[in-house]
Length: 104
Image (cartoon, rainbow, N blue to C red):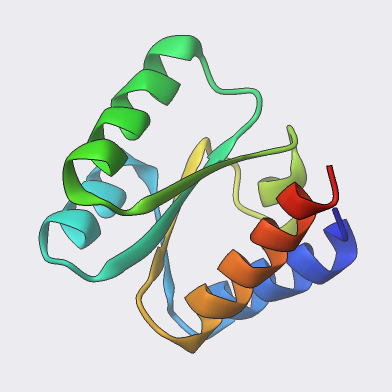
């Protein structure tokens, strides 16, 4: 995974106002159809992961688990969950994450 590139996209999405954080923010974005993907910190508890996986499964929103600490390094915001609103930034992040999965 090109972590530097991913961090850049995540930071840009925050500065562009395309990121939402926390369970409430993510849930609202998903329910309104404005969320393209959900990102979870690798250090999140199993129960938290299951809640977000279930939310993703019900709505069809893509779900990724990032390496522990990467999200905080990229955005400066501590937290376990981040949603990226639908748009070109989300598409770039998805492309970056899918390439990382292909490289495995």
